[in-house]
Amino acid sequence: MLGGLVADDGLVIATNNVYIFNVTHNTIHWESIKKGSISGEGLWTKERYTHASAIINGDSTSPALVVIGGRDNNSQVVNECLLFDDFTTGQFSCKKIPLPESVTGRYYHSLTAVTMSPHCAWLVIVGGYEEFEWKDVGGGVEEPTSTLITDTNRLTMIIELVYIEAGEWIVQSVLDGNDLTSKKYQEKYSTYSKTRTWWMDQLIEYPTKKEMKLQRYIQSLHQELQVAHQNKVSLQEALTEANKQANFDKIETVKSEKLEEVLKAQAQLQEEKQIITEDYEKLKVKVADYEIYITEIEEEKKQVEEEKEKLEEKYLQEKQITKELKSEVADNELYTAKLMKEREQWSQMKETSTIGLQFNYLIPSM
Image 1 (cartoon, rainbow, N blue to C red):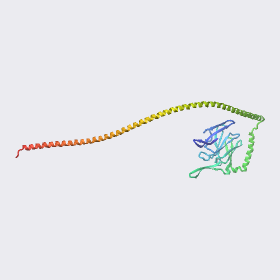
Image 2 (tube, one colour):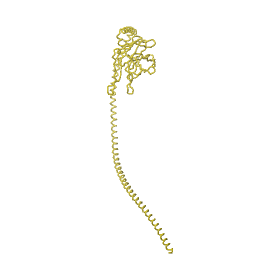
Image 3 (cartoon, rainbow, N blue to C red):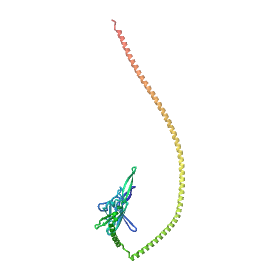
Image 4 (tube, rainbow, N blue to C red):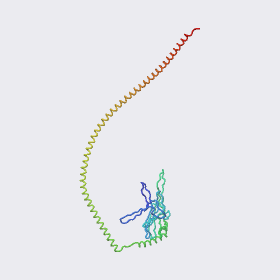
């Protein structure tokens, strides 16, 4: 199995994972093929979805997986055909089969592999879409549009693959709608059909009488086993019913015990609730006392603030008076100094006048 869509962090994206499934009667074994374990042309497949694949089962070849078309993560058509081979040996290989775009350029199509001979397989491809694009529908809005394949030449096509000795598959022919209605195709199909009928008859192994008898015996054993299984189921149902009844009585006892525990827990809870209520009432009274005390403190604080404002106002007034008194004292000191200076000058003038009078008195008149 190759590719498909997977969820990744809330987004849906195409993948290129490859898985191998081995299905038996009662088991399913699957294996994931890691990157690098597939040889051939250094290929690792491109992510894709809406592709088609088919298994080729040949008598002389190992099962091979053919993948055609599909779309990638950009919604572009994947125009290629891949062939995965050698699954049974564990030496996985991947090859590109060269095919025209009229075959590979499609998605949402069907693909069937029909083994025509031990070395030849026909790939029948039918329908699908050929284009995918986003169209502007107005208002800046784009919607996805797909185009169906309606060309009758492409609608149904057959690819003839031939397995050669070197372990390689080659394309023998590609038949389109016109080729499928030609006489040449009818003759080729008739020849292949006869060969295929003979080849399939050779592969069929008809059972012997002993094998048929053994088969009937196995069928009878299966029937007896089925009856025994039904009886076992009936016994299990009866046992389950009995266990249910026993469990019911046990459940009733447990329910009674649990109910008693719940009632005790409720009584204890009610008592604790009463204690909490009383403590809450006491706390409310205490809070009320604290509120009264806080109110008184705030009143006292308010009075202190008012007294403080008055004292500050009185201090400012006294400070202003002191300033004025200091100014008057300074003025008085200046005035006193001025008077003292004038007095001193007056005293000096007085002494000078006295000396002059004495001098005039001593000088005789001429």
